[in-house]
Image (cartoon, rainbow over all chains, first blue to last red; front, side):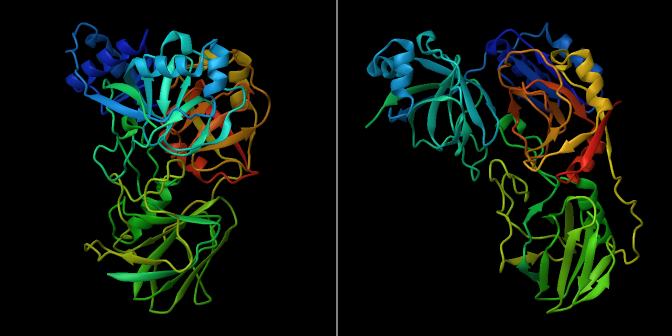
Length: 193
Length: 283
């Protein structure tokens, strides 16, 4: 991809996580960026050289990376809560119980201001994105789409189904690193107010 | 330390340096000057580090007044430059005396004009850069009328007082493309059309990307889970109209990337004005 990068396709977020850890440990790339089922590596040489180094990594067993755990308070007052409940054939309370009953893993920090993409959404809540994206989703909104859950770090357009919001800041540009979560961290949501 | 006052920022003027490199894994866009060559040239003229922060003025039309004596340079999209009404050249060091006004007109070609100052602008760095990120609003906010801009003391580099010859921008720039990781999502005809058709830059374009209009490029239906992007990526949404990602693009996206513009040609994209044409060529 481009002049110095390789995009590696993998089976699932766990495989991305393992390859990322191996690539970081081996120091083969200047930059390693996780996607949901892809990993982008950028080095100084050609994509071919980098791809060769990635293949060698296949034999390296990535050490288990233990992330931190985060408890995130959520007000389940999202605009799509009732629509999600109806589409899933559940009550609103069931949606809240399922969403706050799961433990999520941070798969990637992307888009802008480190939008955290979380895996672990219960299958019962899996829905497509909204047919028409909203032109403005407020910062702190907790949304779901397909098998993903996320927290909007800033007000932006967005097509995810909104279940609620949190005042927990997931990105602070004055902090180093600016992200509250790191890839591999676990997240649990609990209901407030 | 010297100071300049913003008399008029024009349609949009913001600080840019060479960006927040190496932070894509944190979900922080690269940002930085859309025409890095123009910023570097301005800094080189003034004896600055190549990545010192300069002002990126969209559609030019920037007016600054020197509070103290300062040495500045104007580079990038060609425009009429005056100091207190005197016509001055671009791509050369200019001395501003206290009270003198530097005025950049609207560009006669291109889109972004840069003003650099000897010593560099002392805007507050955020996450290691003074660049303003138009998508995530990271970095010093765009300039507004009345802002006092502080210029750092020069570190001692040599000022270049002779004009540097710069080729005028091409009427229709040709951007070299590497194959993208999802080029199989576009039909062979679509990939051929991508490099044979001229593309019109739409007015919805900004630092996050250029929206292009031209023949509809056929692609496979479906959606990809979010995957990493790079500035210069050519994405192909379902409507078949490509998007060329810019310096403030999201670090991940879901549209298939069918090509990636070579790094050296990104400056051409940074100068592509709405309504202008550009072409791609496989390289």
